[in-house]
Structures are given as C-alpha cells and as structure tokens.
Length: 109
Image (cartoon, rainbow, N blue to C red; front, side, top):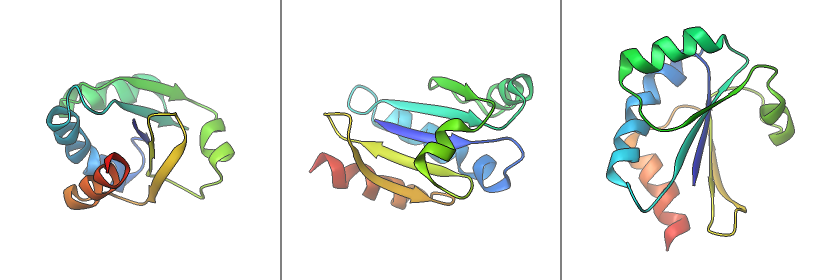
C-alpha cells in the first residue's frame, strides 16, 4: 500500500499528484493507494482532486496527527507498507515517477 500525505498549500504535493495517479492506474489490482489530505481545507482539497483527476481513495487529517505520529517535518511524505502492514519504505519530498517505482518495486521484490 502506498500512502501519500499531502496538502493543497504544498506546491511539491500538487506537482507530484499526477505521478501518483499514473502509478495508481499502472499498479491497479496489485498495489493499493490512499492519499491523506493533511492540515488543509477538505472542501478545497476535494475541488483540487477533481480538477486534476485523482481517483484513488482519500482521507482527511485536518489536525496533522498522522504526520506528527510519523515524525516527518513537512510535506509531501510517501510511505509504502508491505503485505503485513509494516512500514517498508518512505520518501520525504516530491516524487518523480522513477522514484515511486523504486519504492514500490523494492517492497514487492
């Protein structure tokens, strides 16, 4: 499972969203994806997701509790969980397509 923490006020988050959507479509049926809108306005986030065509499931963490629990300083943050639900890899900062593939393939192998 790929979990991406993001916000509309985060420029790099907005830039990487198409990369995540493409990966969601590419890995359909093999890897689950979920976005976590963090410290943001849920209505504005929903409008942004619709505008850019993101279709994978989204959660809302208005208070940023998950980000705080994970101990990361800022957004975007992407984590990959293995089949047992354990943290297998992580990436802080914007993801390029090849970086996301490496994260996912590293867990799958």
